[in-house]
Image 1 (tube, helix red, strand yellow):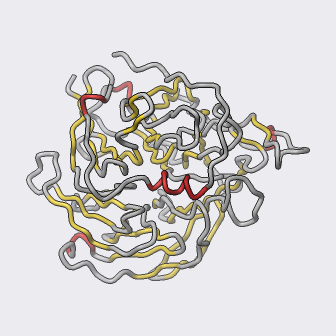
Image 2 (cartoon, helix red, strand yellow; image 1 turned 30 degrees about the vertical axis):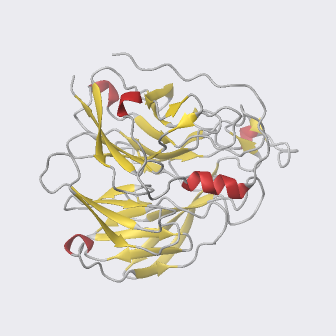
Image 3 (spheres, one colour; image 1 turned 135 degrees about the vertical axis):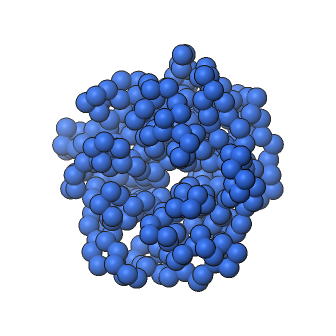
Length: 380
């Protein structure tokens, strides 16, 4: 079974572009449907990709409820969606809006029948949501403790320990600000946060994390800083098995790039290096281990990453789903595209955001640019 070779990248410097443009391109999609070109997508032999739903404007992160409802956050739309496959044919039949008017509600998590939504400063909870899709409850505000700054949109997820993990992105492209650039975890009891702990530091902007299905260790993507050129620094795939580790930002990037502004007197050996350097400026977002049984055994417990795509390179890169293959020691052995083709020359028609393994072993991929969710299956 052939997997695609890593895409080549150019070596031209990048021009400085305002961060407001970065946000506009990061949030990406407009409400009206865009054309979808499945025939342009390339997958390994035996795999098939179909449209699961094309009615989820600005579709960002995904989580599945206990009763099978797919919940999807958005950014520019300010809405949270419930996506339903009522007849079990592996295609969505209906999309409901269960919340709107929220500020960048990109992150969604599910626990004990309730949907949790990140809205920049706040974490909201919608109780018994799958029984109330047609009449959603007013949300409970769990906390409003987070800053309203650049990189304020958040991926959220419950860990195996039952705590809610929440990132706090750097409030800038590059700066040294206390209490930012980290991953925190919250212990929630009832309607309150009763404990907060910083799990990882030196994390510029993670918009996706997950836990290894066997070791239960936290793994996360991190978006590298901008305006050092097309080829540097690489984005990152990291693991944080214990609390208290520092991953380098803003002093060192990707394990071996000393920052020209903040790295004086620092050594990269003082920080945790990534498990895998990803492409420079590919904007890695959602990440999951493949835990299903539908794909061939070689894919079991391997890492799938949605690469949203560069916004400030002289030639675009990313706009794909990549795969990092690990050995038995958890070391990366290969990094290569699993699905590419959302980028055609310098024009993109889609931007992957998140990946989610379904109970039948298929892989869902959200696309905030096309307002779609795709289903990837293996036919052999």
